[in-house]
Image (cartoon, rainbow, N blue to C red; front, side):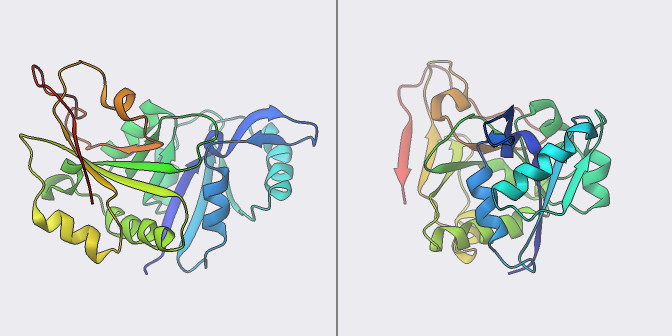
Length: 232
């Protein structure tokens, strides 16, 4: 497995509220990052980015130590965009709650996932827009990210993977073969066919949503009757 450089927003690891241990409270991705840090550094390198002022760094390092996260790559930008930092450090996958930041990362060619639920969730749900796999918008980090997710699935880490598409954008067999070759199990493939008007994220409440860069987010088709969710 090739090494993958993953960037995570600090706000996804910690809720920036100090608890009785003089540390920040656990955030949504803390357990996931703990799992990643248990892997060989030849497989994963984890970078933490924050637009907070560097004055909070002492509490951040105390929190990392308290939760057993041996992360050395911690970058405070002091409010500046993290795009240039991610490129300089060759980060290939970025995870954040910041929708604007995610959009900037994707436009600059970095595979980026929008975190959509705050708080603890037993199973992390990763949803991929099928159009990510079209030749003209494929991200370099995608080919490394899928084998990593597949590996964690094999280790029984609670991860659910869903592939989203519509009736007008059929899933090519080559895409399914890519998941198979990566040993990444698709738990469900969802064909959007609901005319209720809700946003995709509201319908499915994924933990991480990887949408295509240059196109509108997948939404329910108008005047249709149902959502067809096919489990694999």
